[in-house]
Picture (cartoon, rainbow, N blue to C red):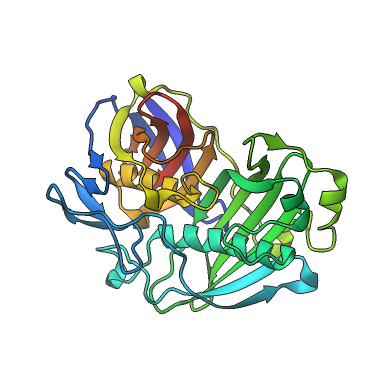
Length: 347
């Protein structure tokens, strides 16, 4: 079956390519991990310990932690009229993609970590809480924390080592969710490296139930938020949510599997959001794509997972006549609890 798919950068609007796709048949091949080890396949590591395509492993070779810090920050502060927040990052020591231009193009995982770190830095400044999981006084009084519900990335022009990278974010609180948009810029080339849109929800840390923000809490940020984030960031086409797959594990290929380790757990007591991105991209690379070919990544988080749980990553892949790929992802526990659905596009 052939499907017509148009692929372009959702952030800058630049055409990547149009392609006709055919659906690959499902199969079941696994790349198994044990606690701290991977049974076979390819390891992901880098100078900062983040995911990276590398050589095959032997049983017993230890995989490096997936929950790693973002590149170091070199400065930051509020943007124009306090409606956005900007930080600069040093990517000199970060992992690169083997086989990329001059071998110096940084992994898209670095970009996702920059986005995550920027969001934390912004709310640390807004709340006055400098912890890794910042919360305002009002949130602490109500036992609340932020949890990421959905995030959509567009990748345009990945920076190289030595480039000056700047990221900017805007914050838009609402009753049932808090919206946050991002632009990551390569200041050396003058090009947009990536953009992202995201949705956070408020959750009670004790009951793990969703919380509807009162108007008083929303009003606290009326002078530091903006309705027109696209104009504020200078990105005319922020990425949009896509329609995600609804297939079951029986209809897909088991591309990789993991056991949740202590190093995967963040300060909210569950697997950190960025760890899932490692899992998704790991399973995509198992399907034969290169990390520097990514154009879009759209993730919807559905359930939390915790230490010791067995994780399975399923994929459905459509391949274009020109070799482009659309991969739909399903990540669930071995018992069948769905943790997320995602879609990635590769040119």
